[in-house]
Length: 456
Image 1 (tube, rainbow, N blue to C red):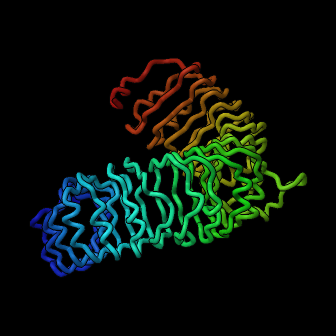
Image 2: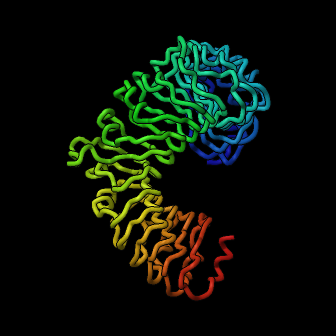
Image 3: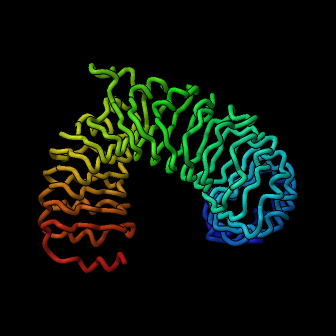
């Protein structure tokens, strides 16, 4: 759209109360100091619009602002205190990915009307004061992916009426407190504590949040038996549970989880020390008793069969069954029912056999069939895919040139198969997005096309 210069006619509209320019592109221009002329402005949204440089201190003149969104620009805010201290009626403040040269928090703790605070990925290096969690109206807090160590920021005795708590990639290096104290934890709906170096067990109060809809607590060092955790759940509204990459142990029934949580739509138990059973009884499961889900991740869960849960799923978009003891052919019903909805499929590192031709996929983005015992002609993925890996199988025959019709491919790994024929010259014309090309340990002949140099 071009830059918004200081002489733009936009600034003649000096009685504007609301301005939303989000997710446009203003040619990496500066935020004009003339935005400070909108003295009646209550809502200003410049998110994701390609602004660069410093946020002008003139924005501090907007004393009537109730919402300020500057998320996802390439900007710095050296005058943070000067700007924010005048915005005493702010209700929503989202500065995600903004960089600060100074401590940002003293002014924040005075914003008693603040309901929404977003500081994701801001590179903060100063400790977050616990007083943030005492703002009287704060419901949404997202301060994840910052490098500061929040040593005093314990989930205990806060007073803010939080419904969303986002602390992803905050290095706590400690246990979750065994009790929330007098905190109003029963209001929480979303808890994000992934990649926080958390240790010990998940305390029972987390599972007893009555309105909880989403719990993401992956990539920590948590221990315990999840089958016991699930017995403590009191929220019937849980839709997302992500326990990926912890140190949980024990045997757990997939059927019992979904029976207890009928609204659960995404479950990840991958990369723990679990053995997951997929059957309700020796007589199998009734398909009518399984809920409709959009994602299931059971990598490294000692599975011996593809879960019956996956039959008759109408909105499944993400499926990871990699690193299990799955034998036989990939069920045709799985591929057929996922042809229009599935976007990511990982069946790598198992023992699947048979061919994989004429797959009716459309719109898939991620496909990994590596390290199985598949054979026959190499399947041609949909043109939408960005990751296609079939390494360590026994696919044979030439590479179909139609593979070059994929526009957004970033990884193509066909190594360690029995592919032959001429090297497809059209690969040299593939998108500049291609970052990994591995055709090693095949029987392909010919020379590399000269137009590969255009990709460098």
